[in-house]
Image (cartoon, rainbow, N blue to C red):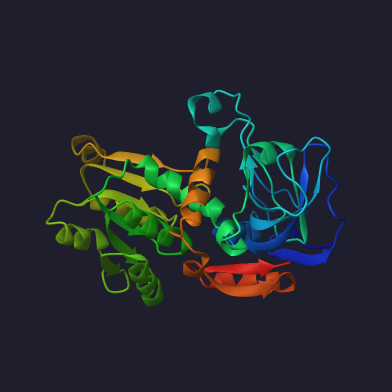
Length: 342
């Protein structure tokens, strides 16, 4: 089969490799579509991922496709079924799993290899985090399940309620998902972004107010003007930059919650005003990854038609063009997703 193999920093080759062998609990899926992700771009730039990718390796993790072969012990799936598989599955036995924190599982099994004609789905993911795609749902829509589940968990971690006002910093695909989901929860959304196109997309996704950081040097002050000086109930940081982490804390109200969803570069340090955090009782949280329950919830949202790939995918390319796509995404921060067709 043809697959995109990552050899190191910005070193990617689309080349023939062996079709993966499957064991008795695995399934083999023909990839119908794989979506690009900001994490994949980071992996391409850095040449590795400490927890998920050790080069040389086939990478990519947002996918939907058709089952073409099942292991001898597999009973839940059969050849010909359309499926979406998450990129991980917890052990269900460790300290964190027993406390409902499966995303922090001590033995979290990751799976990569979506940028290929076929992908092996290991037995644990087959059992705990693979789902049939309803006939009315497209492959591209289904492939959004993994990033949407991450966003859904992040939003639920803030304790969002109908009527809350949210400030969402960063309007790439993840930020736009936050906008859309927040509106589904009945919240008012103030979207903060740099580019005009990002702000226009946020408005189309339902954002109530827009703040352009090209024209506003202190967005937190503008947020407070829009909230009668109080600040937002929830601030979401979806950029991954120490400066925007500070913005999030500065724009949240007393008793409010900040979610540092965007991961900053390794070794980053952030200094926060302890008096502000203490006397305003600000809750600071960070969100990483997803759980099987959030994958299921995300698929339900997609099946209901509340989230569609057309809002987050604006380019389609064959697998042979993946190197060009990755370079383009590196130089066009905030660009939407590209659908890759192996």
